[in-house]
Structure formats: C-alpha cells, structure tokens
Image (cartoon, rainbow, N blue to C red):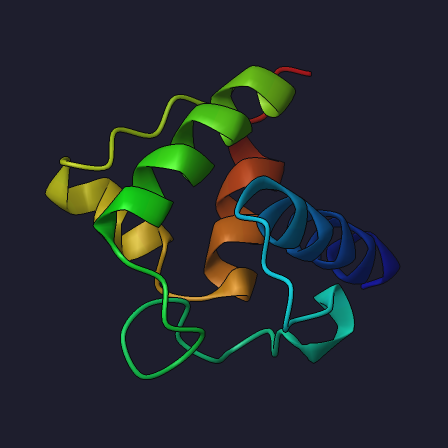
Length: 89
C-alpha cells in the first residue's frame, strides 16, 4: 500500500511540474478524481505533454490518441497503477 501512495505522490508531482500548474499542489490532486474535464481540468494537449514525460521518465509508452490509453488517464490512481505495472525505469 505504501508503494501505491509513493507512486501516486510521485506522479502527482510529475503532473504539476510537467504541466506548470501554478494553482495546484501535488497534495491537492485526489487519487480518484478525474484528471480531465470537470476534475483537474486538463485537456488533450495536457494529455499529450504528460504522455511524453511519462515515457521519458518511466519508459512507459502512452499514446494519447489510443482509446485504451485514454482510460489510463482517468485518474491519478489509474495512471499511477498503470505506470507501476509497465515501467521499465
């Protein structure tokens, strides 16, 4: 359980830093809250930027136009679990 929390915190920091979210801290990103739309308010450009950073940092290829990968970006928890399962770095 601790590993899950740690990776979630790490990914939350990555989201804030990569997308230069000035009004949001990593601690404010709820694990189950939506990242896009009404949740954190991210858009498809943010998803693309985040995908590239995740691939560079963790070696996990996420194509933002892949319908299966869009499901990965539903929440911080889902994204963190996916990265944890597929990371090579």
